[in-house]
Image (tube, rainbow, N blue to C red; front, side):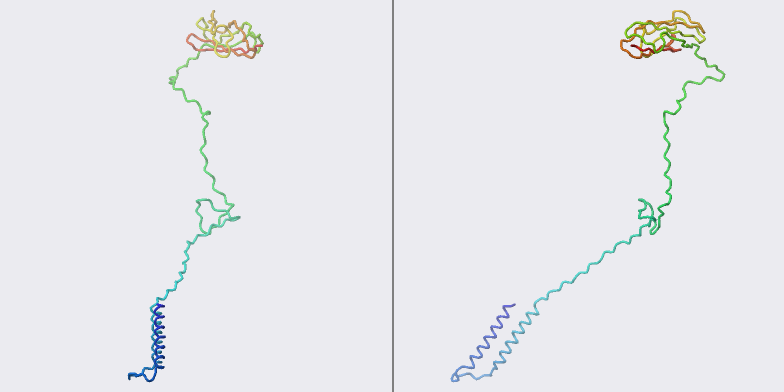
Length: 253
C-alpha cells in the first residue's frame, strides 16, 4: 500500500516536469493547434488523485478493535449463621451439638450425668453351684460318717530340734471319738509334706474301740539338710476313705 502511494507521487512529479519543459520550447517549432491545457489544472488533478488514493488506502485499512475490559464478577458466598455466644468466654459448643443461631450458652450450666456403667460381678464371690446329687426324700435321716479321730499329743513335740541324718522315733497319741471300732482294716498313712518314716502306711495291729486311744509309733530318719520339716498323716479305711488326720513339725539341725 505504501509503494502505490510512492508511484502516484512520482507520476505527479513527472507530469509537472513535462509541463514545464513544454512551456520553454522554441517558438519556431510548429505546434499543432488544439485545446489549451492549463498546467495548474493538471497539477491539481494529479494531487487530487494522489489524495484520493491515500484516502482509499486508509479506508481499506482495517481498524483494530480495542480490547474490551472484562469486569470480574464477584462470587457470592453463602451466608453463614452466627455462632452461638458462650457466656464467660469464647468456648465452642460441643462437637455435633445442635446450636440455634445466635443462642446464648450458659458455661456454668450443669451437664447431664453420664449413664451408669454395668456392675461387673466378681466370679470368685459367687456361691458354688448346687450339687447334682438327688436330694434325700422328706423324713429320711442322712447317715453321718461314724469314724472320727482326735489328735492328743506327739513325741517329740512340735518345733523340736533333731540332728540331721540321724534316726529317731515319732509317737502320736490318737483317740477314737467315733462310733465304730478301728480294726486291722484301718491304717495310718503318710499323706503330704516330708516323709520321715521308712514306710508310707502302717496297718493298725489291735482294735481301737470308741472313746479309747492308741499310741502310734514309727521309726524315722532325719533329713541330711538342716531346716524345718512338716509331715501330714491320715487314718484311712479299707475303702480308701480318709476319716481323720494328724501331723508334726520338726527342726533339723
